[in-house]
Length: 353
Image (cartoon, rainbow, N blue to C red; front, side):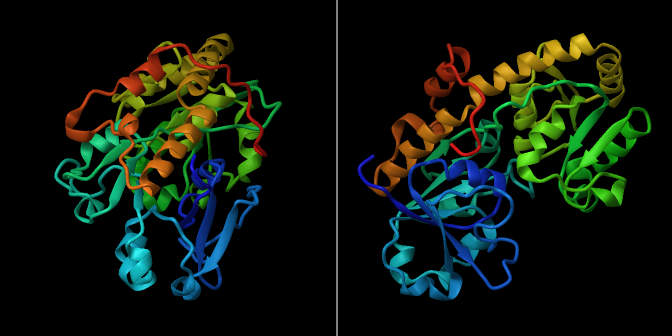
């Protein structure tokens, strides 16, 4: 790292931003009065470090000390001409795309692909494949997660756990109908924002969620079309077996009869979940394998290294060749070696790391 960077960004996904703040740079979050969505700043229950700062939206134009802009939503990217000063608009920029295309799955051009000096980062190889990135420089940086020390899977509650925010409002894309179908046949507990409207338990504070998850027999993911959810990976890191739909990046993470089970047939998933309810040892074996997968592929140390490499390169006006997985359909030896080769020892990371 050549210098400690000052990175201008926004609070879009709290847990992701917290993991990202483990990178040894300074992050400045744009805020508005009342902390509305997208302008929330360093709020909530997460233990933000001293490298996370706030900057009021109406004072942005007065700042000339940022090194890089990190966009994390299409809203903020579209508002950049109004929000940022002319000098800030010329800064090196990264667009962190959290989702696959929401309109057409294969014919949607990414808006950042048409703006010079903008490097697109996708959270999964699947998302990078589905977006039309044009000729923009593109990297894939897969998620990194960490859980509190001392959290271990027990599976004593003979139910499956579902973690989705605002499931009722987000409908079929997030699998509201799939969840309802399964709940009629199996004991499932739903948590997350507004989950009470579907008979759920409400939102569990971020730092309490891993220990809460650890008591359930398995984790069920009903989502049809979204990025690889952090809650899925956090559940894996705790040691829960994962059951879900064989869609998006999930199909490269969960391997049937090893660390969980995926299928596109709801009836088959019901059979598998019933087997896990009736056989706690099977659930424990699959969960142990899920935990190993999470530590090998989604460890926080690798995540921090990848982002540090990318930020340093982009700030210096370079493309990080080791992370440009999708430039002209190149091979991906870095990711392949990371996933298939021996992984470093990654014990439970402290949330205060």
